[in-house]
Length: 120
Image 1 (cartoon, rainbow, N blue to C red):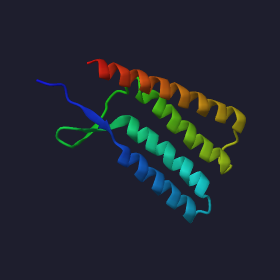
Image 2 (cartoon, helix red, strand yellow):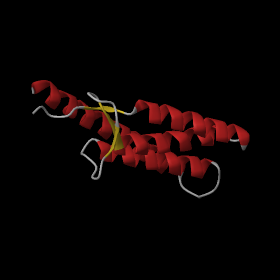
Image 3 (cartoon, rainbow, N blue to C red):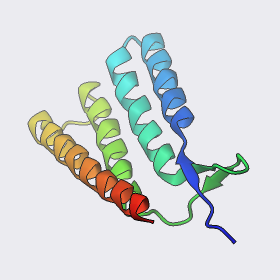
Image 4 (cartoon, helix red, strand yellow):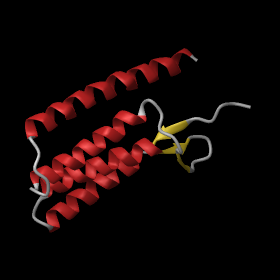
């Protein structure tokens, strides 16, 4: 029996992004909406995968090593959006530093996962 293969649910990310942009436009804050949509999109794509062989949605019960930075990045985008809209008060320098650090960690982990899959 072969191991099931899954792909990233990019449709969820793009859909969340456009929903965020649309809601941002409605409320006069398209930048904030974009950040919130990206945050939700990263979180959804971290926990939801699509089976490649027989397309169906699979929700992960436990996060993998590669999905943890995506969840953190999603939360950082959401907090950034809330900070820009003055819903919460946060130092943006610290927040942007955290965001860039998480993006870097995510890229490294994704590279490790891709290299490990190519060896098999």
